[in-house]
Length: 438
Image 1 (cartoon, rainbow, N blue to C red):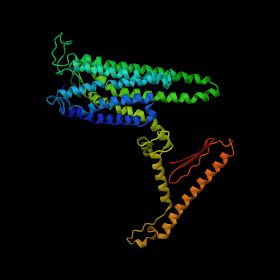
Image 2: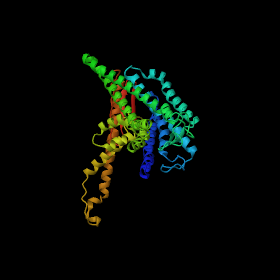
Image 3: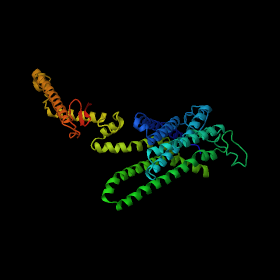
């Protein structure tokens, strides 16, 4: 049934926003992985990188929404394109089948790591398979849809659909093809997209359950461990549980993205009807998969930073958005330095008490205009602090050198921090004295 003008506008406008959000979030994941050499060397992050690149491409075409649909199309809000633009959008939307397949590869990765105990070097031996399956399947189905002239207006955007939309196709019309393009398109929708999609979902569920039972079995066995073994394996078990939670949330992001879309196509296949609330949910959630993945991706980092800054959500967000170049394990970061400076500023400000006189005469408020002697005293005080710090640093360095000359018994590490304009750290070992100032 044709939608009202207001319904058509909602179905057309919402993907512009959700698709753009997904593009931004996928781009942030890509940037986060590419800028960090350590992450680029990990199979997990490379899988996320591939999945995010695929989602970035698909989200872009979702963001265009109804614009690429031929301009003469009726019952669609703001169609501005041609048949060529419609075919291009449908082609790249079909390529998006690679994104859920990459998600399934991620579930298999978790299974191999947790249940079967594979190491990073073992995963790297089969890593190419994780990329080969989604990329090849996406390319084969997209080019097949292009060759079979299946890519047409599908109401929300261009994808696999009959043209005109009212035609039945030869399978439902006693062998007579009444479609100009996209004969039996509904069959190819399921063959090229929704059947593989739900096969992937089932595979992901099986992998998730196997991973869960593996962790649960380890927990039950931990009751029989001796105290020494418990201490050794407690950290490994805790890490496995954290990884399991992360895998579960990725699977939930998968479900949120595709549940409404699948129900919509299933109802359309069974009775040929569409329900606007479900179609609207489809138009909102399907382009938003990159946003869901980004929330799951930053979740461990958010929990970590939230624990460090329980009273400041601003500090948490700054550490996530502006991490130190050295990585998450660096001792300092932009956010840490920024908020330390702010706290220092507040402390110094609160230690000075200025009485503000509403009178416009500056002489009525002598404390608001410190004299030259006061300013000189303050500057001299700062110089004395810096001088004392330098003397302390020199004394500590000399002491370390003396102890180093005494022999191999002085092999313990010594760390001295000087808080001021920067942090100075001296570490003494059997090989000598290292000093670094940040």
